[in-house]
Image 1 (cartoon, rainbow, N blue to C red):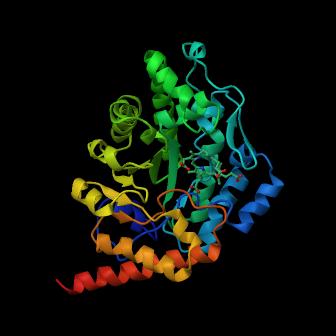
Image 2 (cartoon, rainbow, N blue to C red):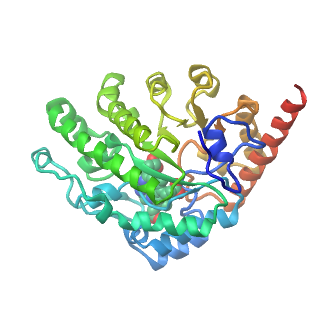
Image 3 (cartoon, helix red, strand yellow):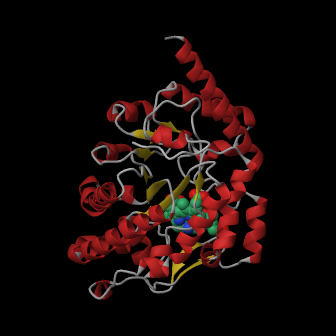
Amino acid sequence: MAIPSLKNDRLLRALAKQPVDRTPIWIMRQAGRYLPEYRAIRKQVPDFMNLCRNSDLATEVTLQPISRFPLDAAILFSDILTIPDAMGLGVYFEAGEGPKLRKPIVKSAISSLQLPNIADELSYVFNTIKKINVELNQSIPLLGFSGSPWTLACYMIEGGSSKNFSKIKQMMFDAPEALHELLAILADAVTDYLQQQIAAGVHAVQIFDTWGSILDPINYNKFSLRYIENIVNNLKKSNPETPIILFTKHANSLLKFIVNLNLDAISLDWTCDLATARELIAGKIALQGNLDPCVLHASKSSIVAEATKILQVFNGDNGHIFNLGHGIHPEVSPDKVAVLVDTVHKVSAEIISKKKGSF
Ligand code: CP3
């Protein structure tokens, strides 16, 4: 795999399972409410989707954590719900309540659903990517992302976050063809969206399948993994050089299916046993993760201890990207993040140089 020339290419090297001098780290939701400078911008723009749509402010927010910490990647500031929003479902956020949709999808509406015109409706995302790369000036890679079709469908049918996903599951059991029709449209939209993010300049993409694991294994394969597989195969045809990361919350028993996909990395949460995952993957796919986000509520010495444990499991082998197992919590102090980034860099550099010396 040809690696674009960047001043810091550790993340891309780790995705290609090539040696690095220290383990790269980025943090899910690294631009977010734990940063006072992010909260200041949110005060100016109370409507979250308007912040995503404003390329200048979205660029500024993307770069906030990069100015504070020596992170090894930036991630586009946006949201997975830009696609349902582009489809006219009216995404909005109410403080403390998570996302909501004004017009959730009902079964009878699916047959007349149109593929959104991604180039027009989401041009603000592609403008933001271009602006971020100008500011980054080839220093670190920029990640793009999308939700998986299943995870997007969860929000589109439930009308927001959900406790037990009864509406989408009811449709899955009573009207599977209608749900498949929706998922097929979403898979095409996600492929188009990620291809255009890559064309605009992202160096790698992450697919968030936050809700795949609420399914039983048979339905997981039918309703979530199959559509992710289509996206991955299409992207590998159109953009063979662009690495793809898949995040599945609580992947545990689903990992044995996920490893068959043509992925570059699998992002694991903290409930996955790393040693077992490493055995299953046998060096074929890089792994990302998997510190419990709650560790960042603990003392600095606990943060050092818990991060070190993860680095020791990898023992400096190729193909590890350090991350949290899910997004950082808004209550975390930025000082703790500084400790984590510093620990990952220092401890991994020691482990890697010791290993080299022992050959
Ligand atoms: O990681 C990053 O820093 C990039 C930006 C990013 C956001 N959302 C910004 C955001 C990314 C990659 C996402 C992905 C996303 N959005 C997912 C998949 C990952 C996951 O968390 O499982 C999901 C499910 C969503 C939908 C979504 N957007 C939810 C459930 C929420 C509410 C979260 C909460 O804690 O209230 C959002 C809003 C959101 N997206 C925020 C941020 C920084 C907070 C909104 C705010 O500023 O008030």
